Image 1 (cartoon, rainbow, N blue to C red):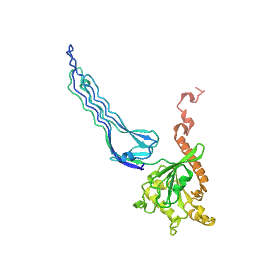
Image 2 (cartoon, rainbow, N blue to C red):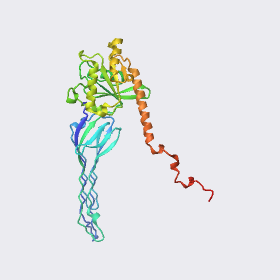
Image 3 (cartoon, rainbow, N blue to C red):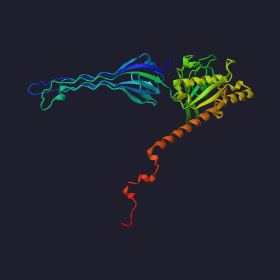
Image 4 (cartoon, rainbow, N blue to C red):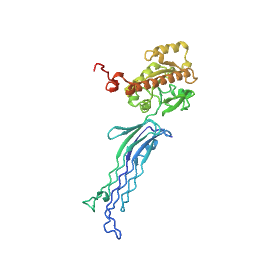
Length: 372
């Protein structure tokens, strides 16, 4: 299936049915009175996050989505039928934006999350609703309101804990094949990876994390070189970036550290927040280097990265990958505990600065004056 991560669609909620003007006319009932029923409500349009869908291809070629209109009311106090709601299934991680106002309508980050995108119109009132003690035979009915119409931009950002970043042929696809259950295409030419790939890394029983591999970046991607910044959006939800560097590049005239700097510059041009994410360096293909050459390249890269976050690996042979995965899992767990503690500190129930202030207005804890 072709991977599509953005789409433009038009949604139209159903219109409400009109109320009707009708009077009861039956034998032996001379004063039947008004009996016009109300119109039915129009159907609304909802979005639901479906974990079984991983692309927006259904919305690339189907641009217009309309819910059912409500039926008009009828005589004998018959109400019009309500229009059926329309449910649009979208992949988890879809960001829904109103193109006319640039308002973010929803961010589907949880499986089976359901959000109303456009509300259906209300059904109009029949003349039965307008009768009163002074108006016994109203000849008035109201029309149903129109359903909402919106132009939406859908943007898919895959949900992953870890994102792989690097030049083409740096070994990202080989790495994700080595540490996870994903099987992306691997070949000895640039831009083998054309779409993002997700893999689940299992460190131990019940301990795992999700890693995302995107097509490689090259210098000038901000100006459209290569695949440009097209897939960098898929790294925005990650907690940690792994910068994979080929220590033995095909072009011997370009030093690996220059390629790494080019990637960092492109990342900064695209998104400052993404640039500031925690980023570890993976020096790949060290099985092709002598020990002295390996130590020299580590020393050179220590000027760009924290030395404790520089890993030497071989994605092909698996050298260093196990320790890397264990460190990543420990880092993610530490971040999770930190976030839980932060959220707990913000809870007013657990953030009491002065315990005495809780009871100062309670008469049961007021000081007793024995002199009175």
